[in-house]
Image (cartoon, rainbow, N blue to C red; front, side, top):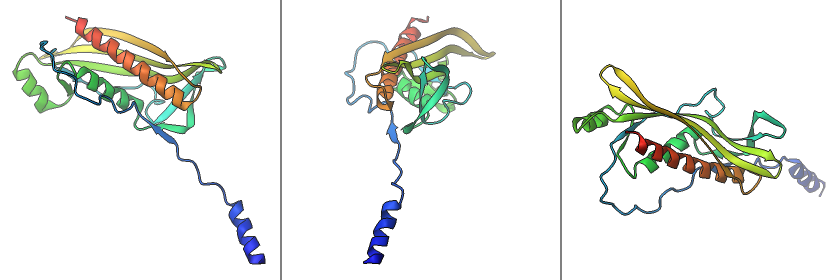
Length: 206
């Protein structure tokens, strides 16, 4: 009996199994193929990898800021992770959206770009830098998903890249809850809105 009591006591003293961090992405995307239209497709586009300044966004942490306490400090949620670094998630979503209206290639896809160039001028290249991607708390009960991107469109010429246009995109969307899940939903909505702005901007550049 004493041995049984000691065994039970030892088991109760063991630490709890560590919780696995929740894994997030932007959702499943399109669930059906959009109906075909008779509009002339837009010119093809080459898409570079999205760069990030510093290194805070080079991992899978879901980050937040407390603007009312210390806006300069980025803090990670301890039990939440993105399925891949934010820049890769944004690029994946961007390519999916732009691909509805035009052919989108990876910058550096030599054979694909060469085939496209054989049918006309070389595709323009869109370069993006993801400058901010965080759950921003204006107060303990009010927060938004904040996405800031710097976009550069260049034309590939025999003498090198020619700058065509540049623009900053800053988008915020309200969070429905003051936690990681609310931040993820807000950042997804802000990303989609920013991508729609980028798509419209590209269409306006002659």
